[in-house]
Image (tube, rainbow over all chains, first blue to last red; front, side):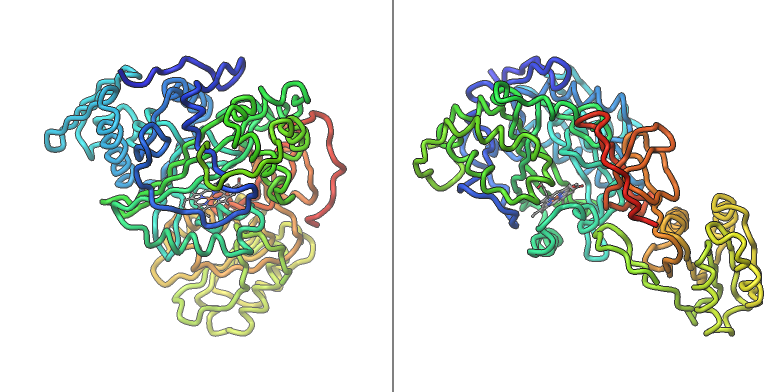
Length: 346
Length: 201
Ligand code: HEM
């Protein structure tokens, strides 16, 4: 039977919404009533059936529409997909990782057959049927990273490891929380994290980098990160900020439930076999406040998170303009009862 | 040397020191950077007959630093009329540079950034370049929207010299571009622009 893919938009008329099942499997990122930056890295182990971590690469009901939105972004701005020349082996590693995972876990939608280096890839939801030679870029319609990530939800960065650091030397970034690949490409771990407040001083980045430098093949890891977005817009890029920024000023006490979205990124990291590079996937999930409060525990917890959020983090995430209004709107869902530990609905 | 603020993505300009093991010294200097060159190389006069100096007076035009540099008597000194023309010549030299050539860059931050970015394009490891910041704190800024570069930005916000948006200068630096990031300051409320502050004089 497979996934029922929705037809919806992430711009203009914003018809995106979550089905009740999608709400239940939403990666709510708070396991307690307060939030602070930490080295929140865990093994990327398979989770319960139907959860967002059941499979290493999560494909959901928004797949087809998200891929359409990515194509629009890339058409308008090709600089969202860039790769330095030495990253080609890592690009092919990524093709293998994604095609293997998608075809193994969603066989009703994606099929891969291999005859030596001769590969046959079928993507039914997007109507793609491609035979190519693994490792031979000329046999694909575009470079390998771009080819496969136009068919997989989430942004991706490929990190080269040298001089005891990670270097963001390739990526495709069309659904980002306000950072620029074109600006950051070629930077190392500490440099691209430069603008983040607090975390440098409490040692989060030192420890996280040390951990990642030792990442082993076959033992991927993951973490959750979050921010907020007005309207279900995927392309909240700095490049287009002068176009979407105005939407942040459109929040009123009446429309909070519909306009204000929690945006959660499931970030996973894999060591790649041939290139020894690391792939960093940034899979964004959106949920409106109206949808969020259908899970009572989340409706209680999220206003408490917003209330206790340290000012520098709120400013950095860019939510100061509508934070109070959102707390006010949510407060009717917080009856003051204690919340149970852990992320999941009760 | 000027102390610069603590921005994680910004390079550290550790100061010029003559590399006594280098077979060739290639020096790119702008404006007040001439003083850094004179200070470093007058301590190591034996290096001068293996030294090429490319100098652009830039912000120090009229101060005749070029004569003081010539008085060092390097193997070659070339005075360029603009940063752009200096970079053209530098790239020509990097293209034919041999093993054992040490590159030095000194002047405003925007100038150093452009020299480093050019050299990295020729396979030079940025860690190997000796740099020293001299002169004004003016920044070179890339507009994140239209990608246009504006040189000598001394205040934030400022007007992008390409697309005309009013940009706030973010404390985030790209070595590849040799520039800071400029982001539209009134995106959320068009027309509401805070007064410009001269932070980078
Ligand atoms: C190695 C792959 C990673 C990449 C490519 C990456 C990339 C980024 C980028 C581009 C930003 C935005 C910075 C800006 O404002 O311009 C960011 C933010 C951040 N990153 Fe990473 N990151 C990675 C891994 C990690 C890890 C392992 C941690 C673990 C602690 C981490 C923690 C953070 C935090 C706390 C923020 C601020 C997010 C917010 O408050 O919204 N990152 N990251």
